[in-house]
Length: 370
Image (tube, rainbow, N blue to C red; front, top):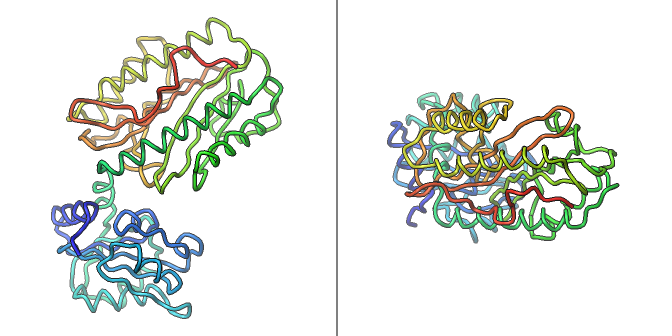
């Protein structure tokens, strides 16, 4: 079987780092490599699945017996091996690795996901192998998206934006934060989300506290609502933040939002290939200072794809370089004590000519007042 584009990217980074093979263990990387969403892997932690990628692009998928039929039908794996309920999946992994010639190889492990007990098993059963972290291989491969991945991410963002618009068209003064949160969740599901990852919704000064759970506070005229939400559509994640005003806002509130909106759009204009994340965050801080807004930190956003947060995290500490195909969230934010958190987040793909928003067409410079 010819290696997929995802596998080819992994193989390239394996060679760059002098590795003979990679062992992936997370549901996201499994899907990335062989296109299979395995129920047991996601539902029961002990029912582990592994994908072994070798330097020639061959992929061996090891999974629970109850997922084998699905994996053989739908995955792109070169070989699919099942194990029974009474078997230890890590022992099966060791046996298969020895059988395919990796007993004395240099192997990258998805160490941010694989349990430490599995690593101990590998070291005992394969004492001649050199085990190192393979997380950078995965991060770098998944950092740039294929046209199909960008298409899926664009759809996820578009449907999330529709869900937000529909939810707040149904919102009124007097509704509680929890009521509004449930309406957003319902509308994401109606738009086809297979899972709602999070709905962070707070009103007025409640929103100036990070990730405060939605409560019984009833919104009133003059409140600014902060919403940050994400969901999974066809395995790919969305992440979008919006502010909404209730009934009427002061000129200062309206102006604060407009200035933040300008900063976000100016940053997106700056997103040219070759620019480092450090430089982009520096531009962000400069733009915020120019419009007299004080961000809580240099944090500007993050990569996104099969996971809500992917490499790179966007701060002045990151030397990651923007390249075509990177998909990043851009989230300028400011906390105004006594008022609200103003926060606008959209997802952007880096192209040869600059940043291109995947959605956001329903979000205007004038804050939406309902």
